[in-house]
Amino acid sequence: MLHPLSLLVNPIRGVFLLVLLSLPSSSIALDPARRSAESVINTLAPVRHVNTSTLSIAYYDSAPSDTAAPVAILVHGFPYSIDTYVDVVPQLAAKGYRLIVPYMRGYGTTSFLSPTTPRSAEQAALGKDIIDLMDALRIERAIFAGYDWGSVAVNVAAALWPERCSGMVAANSYLIQNRQTAWAIAPPASLATRWYFYVFLTPQGYSALASDPKGWAETLWSKNSPQWNWTQAQLDAAVPAFRNPDYVDIATNFYRNRLLYAPGDPAYAKLADELDSLPVIHAPSVTLDPDQAPVFPATDGNSTAQHFAGPRVHHIVRGCGENIPLQKPQVFVEAVLEVAALGRHQTK
Image 1 (cartoon, rainbow, N blue to C red):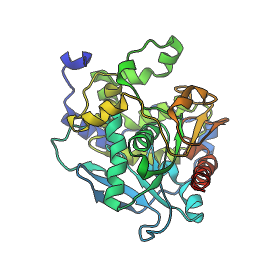
Image 2 (cartoon, rainbow, N blue to C red; image 1 turned 60 degrees about the vertical axis):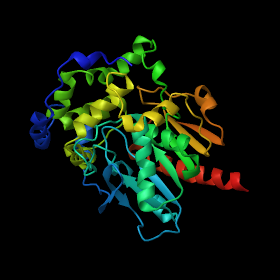
Image 3 (cartoon, one colour; image 1 turned 30 degrees about the vertical axis):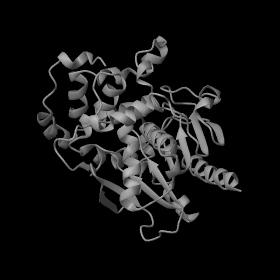
């Protein structure tokens, strides 16, 4: 595959690590309504660590000693953190679930075991990380739930390892990509909402994210969820996740790889080829389309129906941006409970 930016000089990663650790505040001012809503919020703690063959994965576990409880793995997006699920976890825990909430590669204190491992955020790697985490924790089956990058990860894990998935909740339904369509012509309005995809293809985009990850989060939270009055406390809870030394490499690689400007990790080549066939998801699924998320406009679910072979329920989430679990946690809780009910009905 062609990689058009291969002729450009890559930014010197080490130079930006010191900048990244400083985390300067953004110049974007919060509106008065948002400032008045400021309050201290809880975070998911304690954070544990477990090793896979590639990563030391940092994760929250609501019930580490309860091996009999049904498990749900909740996966965050970009630029967010595990604290996206701070209001989802207690509600599902009260229903008897064990919740596993991992920091994705490049976030929080999740780290690569080897300095030579490619810092790839390709879709195959994100999905395999879920399965590797389950193996490390000796979890046979779980509900997979996510939004944004998390939807990509849970789609991949559910499609390629159906025996490990008891149900799937995914915002924007199906985001597995066939690389042959990466450069397909798109309407100008669609490309305009994805402006940052293309900024991150450039050295300037890399250095901009390295110099002000908090400012980027503020911008993307506001633009991708225009009606969400998130608070400074919610943003501050997420910011430590961006201090990971691999954060900028992983964040930019996700878009570079997806747009064919960066190759994948050879270790995932076979899985990447399988994903080009757009494998169907057999697990019971609840899909959610927020109607205030400009990057992926809400649909009635028909355009992605061919990707689901099992029972599926689709909902449009009114008045919500891309981060459903943080903006409307009750909706996400109900989706997890609904997909569990679909699974029970399927096995009868």
